[in-house]
Image: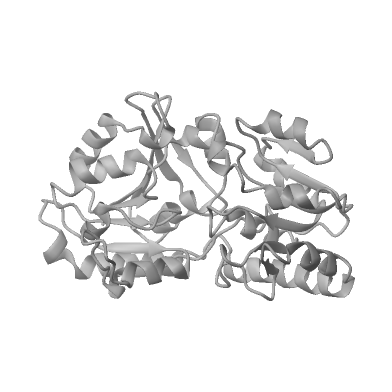
Length: 368
């Protein structure tokens, strides 16, 4: 079985260039590399500014072929960008399975609509923030990250066009973080009571109001940039603004915080929670946004709009509890969110695809 993993969003949505994209060790690359390790030839495809073919390797995992396809045009929002050349390559690839990462990006959706569905080529999707799209009803497997996603996909909706997904098609995909890069530094000086990260743009306005409120009474730092960076830096000079930060520097900065606060309302399963936990920095998030399956109570704190100030103050004033949470967070990350955490999901996905060949597959290639 030949498998191609496709990033739905263009790499320049998050990275400066192809080189920076390849520098990051993350699940988007581990999954196809782990698939290769298990004997299934795999590639990673993504849309970028410059066409390029290269290889990515992590530790003892086999080299992963990575193909960057040039976007047709880069006007408008990045999540609308597509690549006709990627679609053409997919049609000619003879691949047995495509795995589309995310329903938010135009590239993956365009590929499914114009190539995979018409040609009846099996494909799976990995859910990020968006939970449903019309292409979901054509998938042979859906990999979900949060329990609320599973509930929403299996619940009947008043929206007549939404099809309930067969529970047997759903696969849980755990968080995955480089626990050797993101590690606890016991000697790090805790310069900040609270540290946070994210992107500062119009889509996230309002997501950091709680953080701004905390900065009136505590030392706060923020990792990340975006169009609104300069505005926020001028408006809230009491916050330490790190801006866009190199991957290699992230653990060192995270370790300077006593707590990590995910104050956003639009991301219910952020990667930053796993990164902070791996550094032994207890994560905090709003309970009505982040469920307990994403932020277990034994590694951090889930708060409300009404009590986040007092809850955070109380936790910071309890060194013994802080230490227990720190140790539990690091332990949870190394045991549950390591770089091989997606292996069981990969196996289950391949098993489902094999069993669904008669229904989903009519093109000339064959599963082996």
